Image (tube, rainbow, N blue to C red):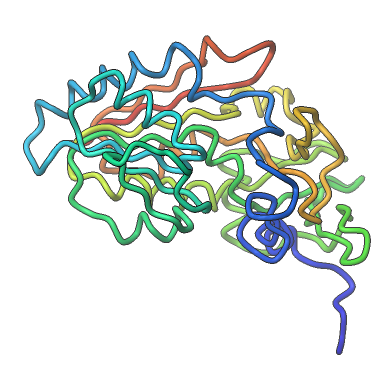
Length: 292
């Protein structure tokens, strides 16, 4: 058996998400105990969903529905049920239905990127909170010559290593448009996979609104060099740790939220804001798009 010298970051990261090294389905206990933030518990999200739900109520279409993508423990849907949101409530998550979840809440166990492609014709609100940052993506580090080189994973240590120059035309075009690599040793993550995921998620909607809340950044910040060190990190026990693709920590990278927004060309309106209730200095942003 030939063992590759290096793994692609996307493949190794995917193993820690849905594969044999899954952090979410592994033996490390409840993964949600490792995170320092949980948007679903904050006071800001329910009023915003009410606002978006009111918009969806005025749209034409089928039964009103709220879908929580990457629903975790189902806490957000539980809060919506208690708040009296009169809609079909659906949670999608890699993990099985949580014990004790309100029987009125529907549950789909599976990869939301796949499940979303199987759901169409929704009138309502789709929510993805702290979801897109977990989607595996390629990353690069510039050499002394400024040439972006792919970040890969050593198959033994599962640590990041610097690989060959980036040659994929689509990835190079994405970087040129959204995150130009212009300085030696700067790092950048390529957000095409997050764009694709958001296109699938918003594709569920015939009419209504989609809400994403995540660690994120925009092109002006990236051009200014704010994120020149890249954003790929690991999380364990509520703390940032060295990103190891071995399933021992949650791998995450900030989301190029403006690129994500452009991946939904059907959107009638787009609003990007700072998420004011994020704890501490967390770089949370929200994206709201409407569809009619």
